[in-house]
Image (cartoon, rainbow, N blue to C red; front, side, top):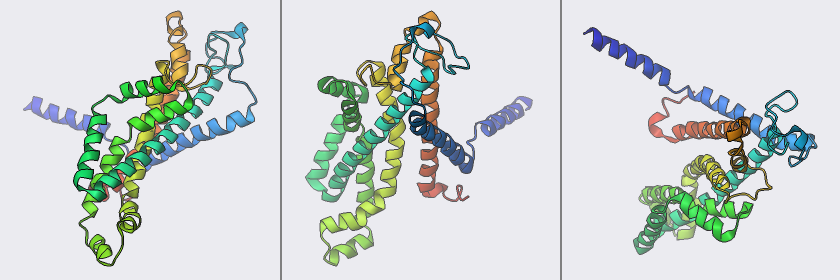
Length: 294
């Protein structure tokens, strides 16, 4: 009996400690972190007139100090300045690639859900075929064909991450097609294009925007993985993946700060975006609206 009671108390304490924070706290903390990062990556390059590619071998491999809070790399470049530039590039790639994948997935899902029949079956078989190939492997093939560049990375991520958006849009449209207001619009003489643009797509817009937001952290990590493998951004362009790739050689010589700084900033940024997406996702969930009424 004592053991059982102690187990119950222990489990309850663990559950309380592991319980997520309130939506308001998650929203505010994520918004503050993203706001600070956004202001930093936008304002600092405009205010601080420094070249993040400036090489000074006299201060190479310096650990963090007051003059260089994140230290310097093996070429004497300031790691903090390169992290700021690299985060700006990685976030830009993540946002643009997420928009590309969402637009492509919305078009495929809307066509499959609205047309139905053999069109739906054909498009869904296409989705299943693309989904059977690992995203990273397919992205590597696309970048290898197009060549390492900012554009090829965006195209690679956009062409490999549209599947979830297509499935979400298709399922939402299929659930809306049987609603009375859709039947009333068709009986009233509205064309398929008008029904799609006036009734179906506006009703799936919140889910599409949520899918886009959820895709941004995944796209950022995908770009980081490609750059880490040497297949993403060009070597001269600062990005989080390139910095971690360059820093892996310094780990053997004790230069831990070169990989810690970009990795830590990447984790903080993606967790903040995921926090905002999680609150938004819970607000769209009818089962949890009563729990999240602030």
